[in-house]
Image (tube, rainbow, N blue to C red; front, side, top):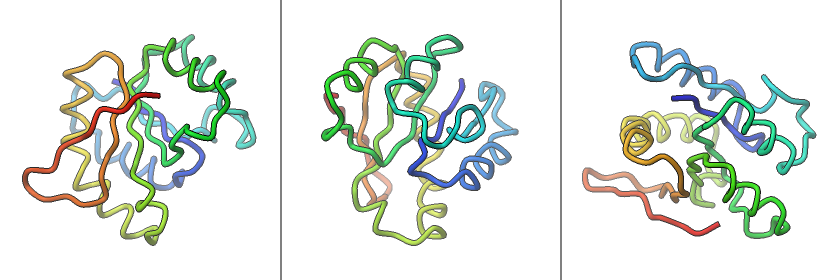
Length: 137
């Protein structure tokens, strides 16, 4: 599995998750947008370029609601699995985001193994029975 962190998440967070995922046999790479593209690359461009080496599991805080139709259509066609972090994530400090992502990471890995595409909202709140919510892009 390959994971891609959108520009609205820290590259340091992606590198930390990459390091911690070294013990997970089926995680082949974790990359941040800035590892593969210029930071100002439009969403539709990087989504389509990821298709060349996909499928990927994409993590983003961007809700893709204000995105124009081309971006949403590119995501639908891509075959990528998308994890959209609830807007509440953006209101938290870097360290709290890191802590919560580490807590969610085993479930993100499991969901990524179970599906080959789709979009899921990752709530901020995490309790023992927390679940993803399927969303339509």
